[in-house]
Length: 166
Image (cartoon, rainbow, N blue to C red):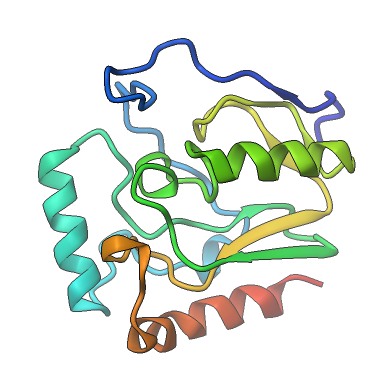
């Protein structure tokens, strides 16, 4: 793991609506690649419809199931409900690009579980050591509210990921 102390460096390039300007699509690497749903997961029709609509509106966004992020040998697991529209769905990394992420990664850094720099984008060089972040639902739900059926449908991915961590 990178031993660089954690820092927070939010990007200077911000669009008029307050969002970070994302000009290239970055492909995040999963901490547990063999446990992820496919990039175009077809299992939840409502989530597929949202994803397809956003791919048209925001072609530079991630707009796909958000992969696990962190240390595959973690002792601490953090489970989010689902990706946020302007956070993980945009950046491809859980809790990245929104206030919740800034707070979470700053806290993990204070406890020595995050190294590098949090820059509110997946390619900022931030790394987790001893912690991993998973989502109960991998794709963005409308209004950030997954249905019970969507949670059940995604549960095998979450269970497989949780079982893969020691």
